Image (cartoon, rainbow, N blue to C red):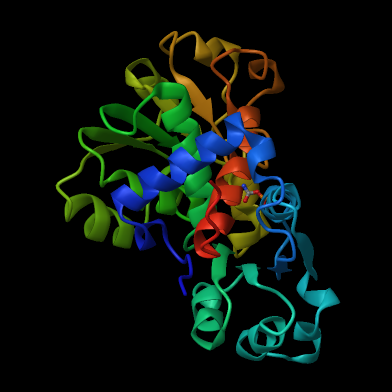
Length: 306
Ligand code: CP
């Protein structure tokens, strides 16, 4: 039995196979419509979510399976003090696979140690968000045709943004990827990512503060929101929240084929006037999230579709 805690849980070859499967699902959805009949996914969300929870549920329903779960800690027995270890032992009796989001780093890993069903980390605190990374990789590969030979700008809250941490972990394994890390001083990438992932892998990267300075050289811009829920005080959040706003004028500095991705939700960091620009692909990215979660469920449940 396999769990998914980090994008590194899959080798590059396994990732390629998973993304190929997701592309086949996109082309032939009917072929997979009954693949998980009789199977259930439990979505255990101790933190708010729109995309991740609903896309897991849509993925399982698209595969002919069923869904159960809770969407907040308050509506589960966590409110009475139940541990994730006990909860997963219970849920293992009800479902075949589960996706867990939790505000504490490592909570899905703790659950996986007591689980008799595959556990998927659907976001743990400011740590990792591997299924967002699978979504991002599928989007990039499908729309750019490759995962190597790219200059990628990561912009916004690089300190608390778990999607950025997971994406860097995944992309350092591809050749000739150059990162431009665009953030205010207070929201720089954490040392454990800079030193243990980027420096250790001899990765080409530079840190800049002004988005305008980076835009002309990028193949891809990955925008992120400032993570309000991880700030210790409101004042710091208010000071940081509108530090970057991508608008039409800034898009003119970018290459005609630069893609704009965002894990969403968006707050103010991308002006709605950018949505109609063909380079803005963040809503397409959401659709890829369903295909790749379908592929992940099939892979972890070891369901073969001929
Ligand atoms: N991208 C993402 O994780 O969105 P949700 O918080 O809505 O799940």
